[in-house]
Length: 219
Image: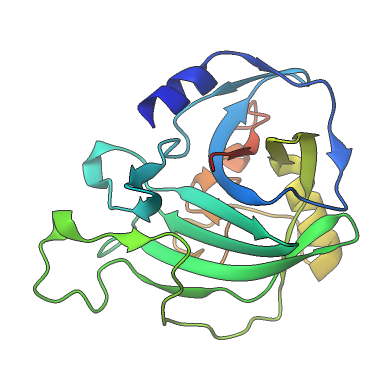
């Protein structure tokens, strides 16, 4: 998988971005990319390193070795599921999963189920704890008044992209909410593409960055 990041670290050119009405089946992984309209470069705002063991992908805790923010999008016969991990604040990373559907050329996310990475792992050695991507787990699934909207745009059959500026615009419009600001003490565990100073919140503290999340098909 390191080779996958190495390839993506090269400048990747995209011809255009188009609204979506259908997503090809597959497993997609998140990469943080920046750059001009037709050229993007991956960097380390997100993990950018899918962990494959055998035929499956897993969440592990990167700890101080790297960023923990990463997202998988699973698509099968128009059924969409997200599995994600956020960088830790206290006591370890948070992980979550959510179902979603296409709505008005965007993805509308159902209320996620979330938990702390180390919940219900008493006695396990920290380095051995892992979660298989695609396996749903129990956790906090309280509903929220707000829904997360993910404005996914097609680059080609293997790649889709979320522009973070558009992400904020669509969520403010859908939820009739105030303009976004990064709140370091806020719990973002129920937001797939937001975390403290990370993912799309990164551009709020780095005004010169025009970054976004590239979902690249890896299986």
